[in-house]
Every structure is written in C-alpha cells, then in structure tokens.
Amino acid sequence: MAKTMTIGVAKKEEIHAVYQLEQRLFGDNCYPDFFIRQAYDCWPAGLLVAREQDNVVGYVLCAPQFNSMSLKMTEGWILALAVDASVQGRGVGKKLMQEAMVALTGCEKLWLTVHPNNHAKKLYQQLGFTDVEQESDYFGFDQPRVKMVCVAV
Image (tube, rainbow, N blue to C red; front, top):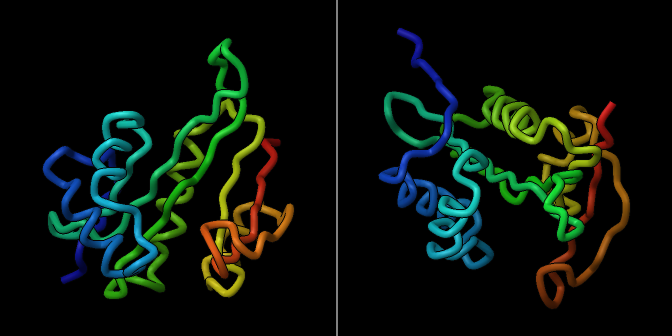
C-alpha cells in the first residue's frame, strides 16, 4: 500500500520533529532549535512540513522580506529546505518548494542560498532560480553559498 504524503502548515507540536530533521541532515551547520521555534512564531504560514503517516519527513521555511518601513512585501526568502533521506528522490523537495513559492505569491523576487555542491541546486534551477553570486564565507569561514533569485513572471 502506498504511503500518503501531505504538505501543510506546521503544527506547534511538530517543531521538535522539524529541528530533529534539520539536525540529522545538517549536523553542526543546522539552525538551532530556538531559531526554528521563533520562525514558527514569526512566519507561521511559512513553515511548511511534508508528512507521511503523521511523521515529518521534510520541511521548508519561507519568509517575506520587508525592504522599507512600509512593510509592503515585495521580496521573499526560502530560508531552509530539508527532506529526510528515506523519501529523497520522490519529489518531496519539489512539492515543498512549490508550496513555499505559492505562499510567497505577490513577491517580485524570491531569494535563497545553497551550497555550490548541493544537488538541490538543480531543483532550484528547474523552478526558475538563477545564480546571482557566490560568497566563499557566507555562513562563516569556508562556508560557501550561491545566492539565487527567481523573478516573478
């Protein structure tokens, strides 16, 4: 029997599972648990999870960027994407990204960063993101990231 995958806004009781997934996949480079908790409070509709049989198997965190005090949302960020190894290759990351992009509808530009060697970069390119620049120390010494943008059509 096929397992049913659903994607929706994270529930408060799922925050720890999101952190555990983040920690499992990114180790020392993961977001701290308190950041994920505060992200839930700051952008509750932007913390989306993929669930399989009530287990969190992926998540994406997206947030609006306010470029002026007018608080008009013109740009957005995909701050994190994580998919459990047990479901990688099944389109979970793509579905999460598509839902995040829908959540940020109205933004003129969407931004994200990715390690230059991360295979997810191909997914981002398929979804319309293009390279803007690469910084060798984006997250600290020897932590390179490619900054990518998707311009709304």
